[in-house]
Image (cartoon, rainbow, N blue to C red):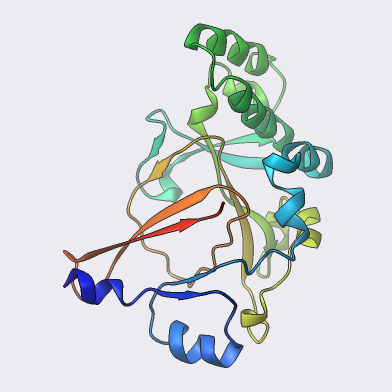
Length: 227
């Protein structure tokens, strides 16, 4: 059973045509991995932390207010995304959390704790709600870059200039483009997405577990990674 399920994951070194994508992947409701399909994006280099991407994002959209998810059980984010505690904060503050996490990877907790409070105990709005919060407790999930149905919800519209619609999807009308970003390894609970998703990894690594509805106990593991 496991071997037959593993065959359902198709891997492509280049993007298929819109017709091939619709007939071979989308209509069959199977996962697929496309390698290197976003290397021509500006975001591929400009957003990457290894290339100074955090500074770029902070300068570009740091003044935007975004809704972040906060977890008291970090690094695990359990439950329906709609039930998670959401806090408004400046995007620049989240970037500071990310930078702080990079600086403190090799330091002990006491140093981390003092720097954490130096960052968050400012009393400024809307970040005052984050007082005493560690970087691992904050997670950006589904922050809109583009939303065809509700433009007012879009929080990071300026970033749309750094991305392109993959050629595979050019014949389709996108409902939304969202940013997912974290400063440390985290886990989210099992959930159901009502729409097809095209996940583009700029930097980092994503591991997904897919459960086929026809056989709930047969779990397919597929690792998405970017090096």
